[in-house]
Image (cartoon, rainbow, N blue to C red):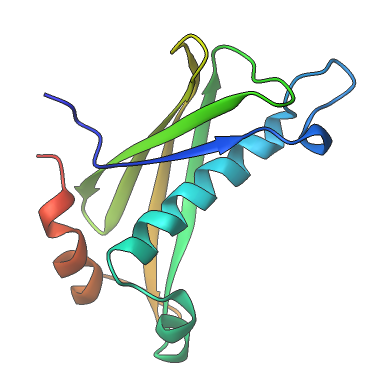
Length: 135
């Protein structure tokens, strides 16, 4: 059974690569964030509206393990699944090269929710993420 609940295909752009011709490590965070935002938008959550209500999901911690490099012009897919741990939502995100299916990067992104600047549970996110949580 596939654990992933969402995926987004993308393509490496030239300016994301370093002198070695591979994607600079920092750009993987952009790919991961873009995928999370697309997922959250898909399930009907608007970040600008949340902020107006004093609700701000933020990254508390991120870890990335780099496995196989991406190069200019390569297509890849970023897949994710979610687990809840206390007040945190752990987004497990893996990036795969489409040419050979190899894992390019594996990550765990810990998201917490601030409501009016205070850390705590978010009923909105608990309800929105409930159908997608891996137990």
